[in-house]
Each structure stands twice: as structure tokens, then as C-alpha cells.
Length: 99
Image (cartoon, rainbow, N blue to C red; front, side):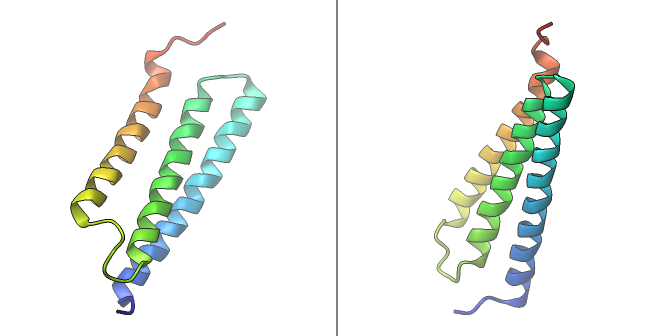
């Protein structure tokens, strides 16, 4: 079954969001390298996970039916990505920076 226009738009949007997240991960990593602030590594990792989540979502939506990942499992996988992102963004607030 060919992709619908909505599925194609959704996959394209997810891919663009993933590319932006990947660019932000690189920028955060470069900022960490320049500033020496090790906690920016957590931010870079969060953006990298966000990029991976977007790539996974785009891949699943762009795959014609039947989708490789059933809907319930897809929701679980995307929620695990979300949890990882939240944890990575909170870690700099919880972990004391080393001097």
C-alpha cells in the first residue's frame, strides 16, 4: 500500500526535526569542548537521543503498511526515548559539576 500524503508529510517533518536535533547535539558538544563545561555533554546526548527518536519515528511512518512496529509497541519505544531525553536534561541539575 503506498504512503498517504499525511504519512509522507509526517515522515518528512520527523526527518527535518531529527536533522535539527542532530545539529543542536553537535553545537552543544562543541560548546562543551570550548567552554570545558562537562555538563553540556548531557545536553548534547539529549539532543542526540531526540534525533534518534525522530529518525525512528520517520522510519516507522515511512514504511508502508503493515508497519514494522505495532502501534502499542511504537508508543512504548517513543516513550522510552522521551524518558531518556528528560533524564539527560535533568542530570546537569542533579549532578554536581566537578571543579
